[in-house]
Image (cartoon, rainbow, N blue to C red; front, top):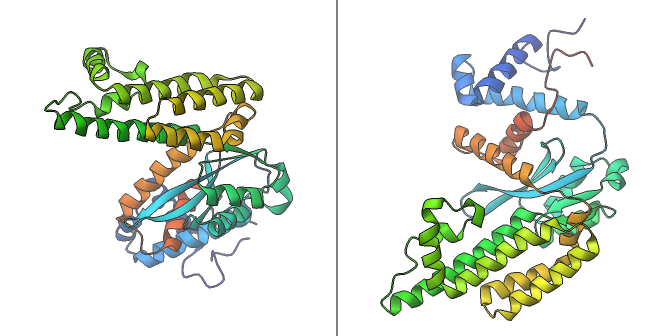
Length: 321
C-alpha cells in the first residue's frame, strides 16, 4: 500500500496534497487556496512544485511531430521567456528564462528527448534569429516554418507606420482625413463592418500610400497561404516581393526584404501548414496566470505555475508508481 506521505521529507499526506491540487485546479489562485486551507503561500507552492516534478517524471516519452517556439513577456522592461509547446496537443513542453539562443536551446532539449529529436517534422517560430538558430542546432532535421501570424503582424506594423507618416503630412497641410482610421486599416477587408465601408473608402482615397501597403498585405494574405506546391509558393513570393518593393514605400520595402530573406521558412508552410495559434492562445492563458497572481517573485515560480496548469501533466500524488 502506498505510504501516506507524498514525499520522503514532505509535511503533508498524499491525500491532503491531492486535495490542495484539486483546489488549485479549480481556483487557479495560490493565495485563495492558501487562505481557504489555512496554509502559507510557500506551502501551497511547494505542493505545486512537487506535483510538477512528479508530472514531468511521468510524462509519456512520446515523439512530438510539430514544435512551436514563442516568446512571452515576463514583466515590464523587456523581460522575456521562451515557451516551447506541442502544436498538436496544445500543451507546454518547457519554459526557459529569456529569449536568447542558449535559453531556447535549453528549452528545446528539455522539451524533446534526444532519441526523438530526429522525428520532429517541423518547428514553427517567428523570424527571431535566436529561435531559428536554436531550432537548427537542436532539431537539425526539422523543417523551419515561419508563423503566419507574425508575418501578418509585420505587415500590419508597416501599414500603421505608413499611416502615421501620412497623417502627419495631412495635418501639416491642414487636413485630417485619417483621423480615427487606424482600426480600419488594421482589419482584413472581410472583417470591415458594413457601416464602416463608406468611411474606409474615404480614408483609402485620402491615404494613397497607406492604401497601397494595406492592399499589399491583403494580396499576400489571400494569395500566398493558399499555394498548393512549394514551387508555386516560391514564385508567388518572388513576384509579391518585387511588386511590394517597386511601390517605393520604406516600411513596406523593409517587410518585403525580410520576407524575401526568409523565403524557405515561409514556403515550408505548404509542406507543414502549422502556426503558433495554439501557442498564442497559451500565451493568453499564461498572462491570466500572471494577472491572477499579481506577478511572480521569480522565474522559477512562474515556470512551475505554467507547467502545473498547461503542461497536461499527471500530478496525482496518490498514484502508485
